[in-house]
Image 1 (tube, one colour):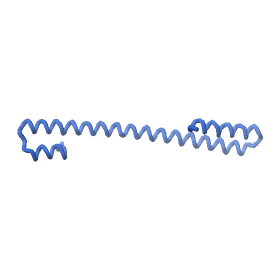
Image 2 (cartoon, rainbow, N blue to C red; image 1 turned 180 degrees about the vertical axis):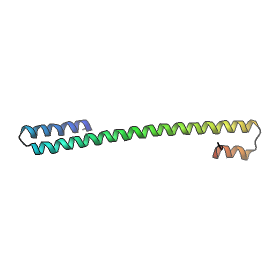
Image 3 (tube, rainbow, N blue to C red; image 1 turned 30 degrees about the horizontal axis):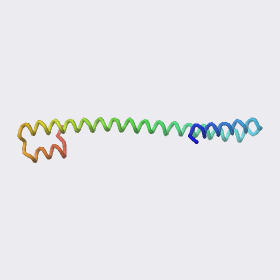
Length: 95
């Protein structure tokens, strides 16, 4: 059963308890539904934040690769020694 189905089931139990004259039980189930719904929303927000952070990191990584490639090509065209090319490839370039 998915999260929405589980919450709907708990809500039905709360409603049934209220109809059956047990408001305390209904309140406990209703509070549980509310807490679980908040937790589900928090998890979704955390996942969305994580995806956004990864996308940002990916863009920063791509930018660094582009900088290294440009520096490598420029140095190679200028007949830089192999040690310089290796340093650019491994360490990048100073800003």
